[in-house]
Image (cartoon, rainbow, N blue to C red; front, side, top):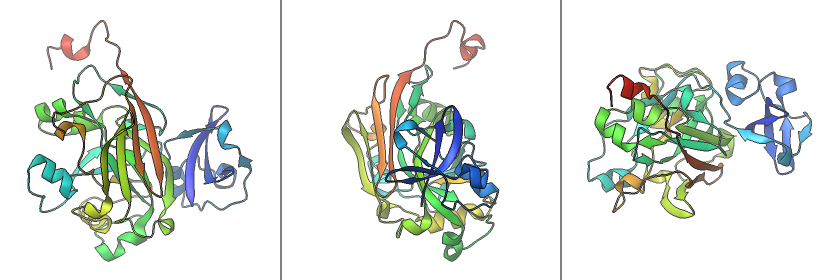
Amino acid sequence: MRLASYSISGERRLGIKAADGIQDVTDSTGARDVGELLAAGAAAAGGGRLVEAASVRLLAPIARPGKIICVGLNYHDHCREQSIDPPPYPMLFSKFANAVADPYGTVTRPIATEMLDLECELAIVIGRRASRIGREQAREVIFGYTVLNDITMRDLQREDRQRLRAKGSDGFAPMGPVVVTVDEIEDPQSLRLRSSVNGETWQDSTTADMIFDVATVVAFASRTITLEPGDVIATGTPGGVGHYQHPPRYLAGGDRLRCEIDGIGALDSVVVDEEPRVADHAAAAGLG
């Protein structure tokens, strides 16, 4: 099943994406996105009205996840391009709901950065509450998968020595275009993922290159963080990001970004430069 949140006549609704359109399930479930569906413990059965795909705008499938947990340095080739050893355990950090953005929208490059970058990632959607589970139980708590672009300000990441501003700023997690349920992804460790900027490929790898596989990541996170229905776990990015190219390359206004994972779909975003303001808070406070 491929679940999509969409807007029609200004209203947010949930449906099952099919070849001939979207079968609406909001009336039968009361849910407007996948997060609300899972929180309510509802099932997205068929039978709703069919909506023409051309008449709707696809939205992020989960508008406000309770948690967005991310994994850093989880691909061998991403470690190799930095000339560092793979970490001994999953390196977790977080984004907040303010970072969620629609799959076919814009990404704002803040005036605070000159080094905006992208990261194509497979994202896990949690379907059941999980605490202190083992690898063998991980599949049971996964509802499905989606695509997430972990937008990053590399200069702020270096200056702050952590990831909160660099990766958690507004709109820095384009997500979608659908959530594909776990039964349709036979092996999450054999998915090809790639990104491009203005049609030029930057990343091209497979989830087989992960250091810690999907089951390990879910089990590890659940050791100390209770996972709830609708939570999202972004599993890391492969090599090829702009910052580690030779020479480094960064995103600017007008750039067209694409992040794609076979079997799920693609995000298509356009970068827009933030308009300078008369008085910037940081400058007024004497901060960088």
